[in-house]
Length: 144
Length: 474
Image 1: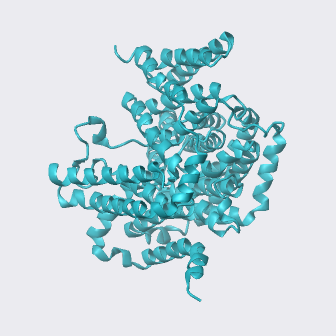
Image 2: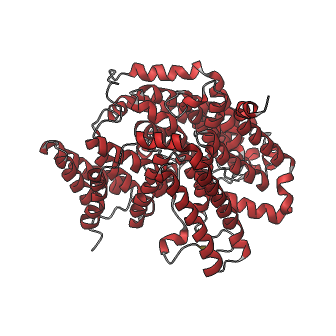
């Protein structure tokens, strides 16, 4: 059995049990409010327990699946999370355009393609979303 | 209609913006309109949004709306295999004909449907919603237990925030954001979009994998559209499922495409190949998804009870237009009711034609290098997630549920089942509370409930019969 195939249901089991414990021992929810979450949480926990016990029997399939899955790339994760600071520092309209400019240039696209994409992003977010559709995207940086 | 259709297409193609957004945006424009013009304006844009959502589901693997998540299962693998055109054609034709089917049934049943719809009470809605999750969890993945875990986790996550009965905030842990519970758009975007974006960033390659360099042409789309006529049984069964589920007041139309998909997979001679790019896996959810809209108009117009969240908004729009849906509506405005059915039918066909025109550039999207497409997609997803509630925390939760989506994908857990569980969870709890209060613990023993339970068990266990027979000692 692969480690992940065991850890994932174990995490879900821990999550549901700790939420139920929180509701019962800390928040002291009434029976009316707690009955349905309790039933759902118990069903979820039981299913996870079944999965943990039966995971060993699927060891071959899980190992094969794990081998086929490519490992996560740190560079792609970095590009993914890089958007958040851009949005925080420059707002959604300019932050998105700047992120596109930097990420396209960083991935070896030409200056022309990067700038055009950034300008299209500005046009879509400002003209289409804010002006036409009335979406309230923050133009100012989020920290202001 | 000419104004409503393109607006609906634009909203539909933007990840995160749904038919609800389109209706909320368009309703203020109907003030002072003639009722028929207002209905045409709203219904045509609503029909077009659904089409846009299925296009993003096929081309990008990102469902525009919850029902489109069922289209991702086979539509996106088809796009990866360079068959995006075929999938788009099948989706457009199935949507148009499914929408027509639902509207014809709507027009035929409007005058006589009231007693049938009213026989469907909260116990039946509860059973149907649970059955829908079980269907998709068990039948649409190779690992039924993991599918059920995903579905149950979705229901559990939907229980965060204020309880519907007492208004007590549950499991909020001191975070104001959680007082209203988790939100749908960050969950949907995180589960479906982030794993695909990460994959595009990692490989840098286009969605359509190398070796699938067929020339992009509208012939592929036409070939896909013709596939609907090669599988008439799949189309009719799915349309009937969509119309019937859509008709049930409050039953949750989101269930329909998942049930139709599961039924198609289960009756196929080669069910194991579903999920790897079967065209029937696109036809079934698309036909039922649009057929259910016709069905959902039945309780909205005939009873004044909306069949879905979008129909609840539409109900408000009818009141804005000076109309009061309900039993009297059919007596006083039968002409308007039938006109609404015709507008919806025409809207479905017209939006399919509009999407057909756009399908070639959409197919080109699958050939854009991943390192260019991924950042653009990420920005669209984040803007869509933010704009639903104007809350930056939604952006954070896209990343959180993105991590969950990546883990689920890697360990073989069913993401559509989680999404459906989340969407139906609150409704399931509400019907559970109403049913136990009104009928006691025996609410599951009502005839229609028992029939649905029996049909569900039969449908789930029938494909497993060979496994049981094999185990029986000689």
